[in-house]
Length: 113
Image (cartoon, rainbow, N blue to C red; front, side):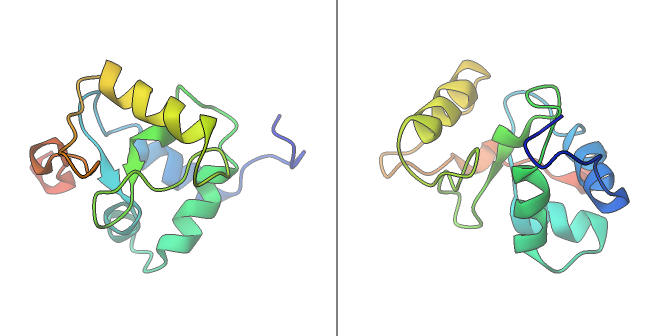
């Protein structure tokens, strides 16, 4: 289990289930993931992802900020964990622009399912 030492809540499981639908080479945003679940709080999504005990099988690295910047990872917003997130995304085929934002064509659309 994760450092929080409790099983995931129903909400967290819903977040993880939805996130598993985002394929390699694509990303979603905290806001889009929230809208898919009917949750208006990107922060609640971020907290659920921070507690993800199933990574990397539940690919929380595939969630980026609304402006397509990398966002956080493993509770950090800079440093080695962020570099690891970028590396994981690149290895999956996600492309970035010169400003470090994810290329828009790598953005997953839940409505396309």
